[in-house]
Length: 99
Image (tube, rainbow, N blue to C red; front, side, top):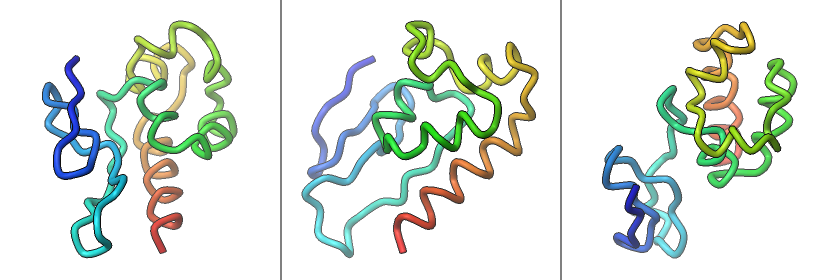
């Protein structure tokens, strides 16, 4: 995956998503949205505060080496976690942090 600096934000070209908004003026910030295709590692790089949300949802593998390669969808399936519920909690946390 190639990650480059674009408009002051980290932009993942492969997925076409903004994963941060460092250095942008307030009116140019893009809301971050967690998706099922993100790896656990990517999610934690967006905001380390998401680790307790993942762990509370039953995903205790946040420090596991496979978390750098496993998508949220794959990890949820392996751990028997409802993906949509976990996604809603993760994105609600990020939304609350933006306010």
